[in-house]
Image (tube, rainbow, N blue to C red):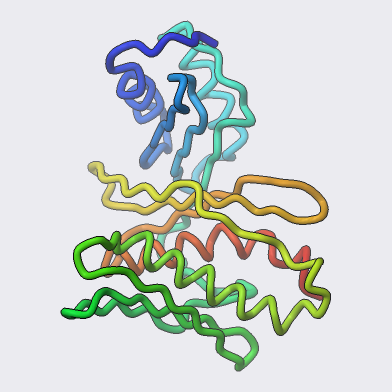
Length: 221
């Protein structure tokens, strides 16, 4: 992989990937040295994500002479009409964001088997990021759930936000949330994506939960 950061390189990579079949949106993230750190791709349900991943690698090599490690490519699939939370271990019950003279506060309530778990996050009135605030509240709600569901404190994972990205193209708007999950078995990156159907910050909560619900079964019986 080339290490020099060329002007518009990220835009060129995103353009190549966006032109592939079944790709809805794409976001490329560089590290501090200008190397490609993560490639987040949102696709529809018409093709296997593994095949799309191979297409991405082939297209970048063919058009830009760029080789990207497949482990850096995260592909999330969206099924039109499928509500977030259906058949998931945790479901979104409520998401609220309030702003007044004292500051901003997000509250996210999650539900599972008739039980609810709430998380709060606050910030100064003029120093808050709505998406980041809601994601933090979502993770706090998940933490409350894990406190009751996992008795062994050492067995509970640590969850850290890596990136929150809002994308917009002809297919619509989406929010992707990249999380770092640290646990006894290792350290991994999780990606969740949600289409914006109401407010963008509601989609951020759905995206965070989308990422986590894929792994919560590892820790909860």
